[in-house]
Length: 111
Length: 156
Image (cartoon, rainbow over all chains, first blue to last red; front, top):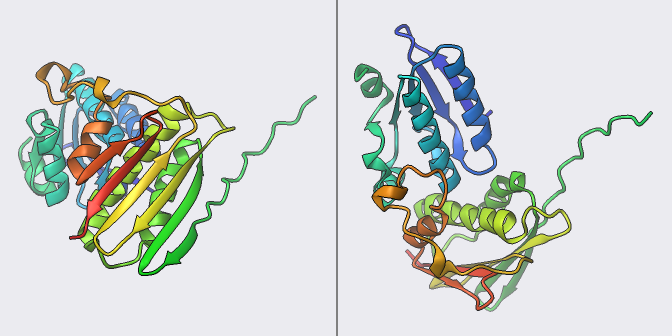
């Protein structure tokens, strides 16, 4: 299982990405988040603490989800990026597009 | 009445290994289906001889760039045509690892790809593949036809 979804007491949906977020599994993530958005979820945290690597398709799906969540008046935050993943976001300038917290706790506290 | 066909089991992937002198060469043919990308990357990364690259560079730079090149070859080179394969050859020398990814398509012009970090392109879902490749590799070189890329990671 690549992705886990949990809802905290405040209704924030925390999505854990286990292993990698790449072209072969990005649709699964997208569908899970969109299904939750459709059923009323508005606050999302994607946790990369257990993620080894993300390719450009994975980055693209995050951009797309961020837009769709914002369109519904929601908010998406990312957290748990290791040093390499953080560098990837900085190189692609996507660090300017996303709210990125160090840990899931910090991401949840920011809502 | 035609019975629905059960889903086809994924085709097994076989890594061929050749050692010459102190160097090792791994090769693999990957079907033109994006579902194979993750498995192919793990298979090669797991069999990569230790030596030139640190575990961190294998975990991140190698895996990300290889996944990127493979996905490009399957999607844009072979257009996911089940009759075509992507040929992968990995040369492991003492000073560098070189990954050759070759598709059976007509090639493309890497110079025609716009910078995905421009403000007007930042919110686009696609178009970051080549940029990510170049950012994570020490060298990225295409053949003249544009259907084969050589990714180089120097030792370290």
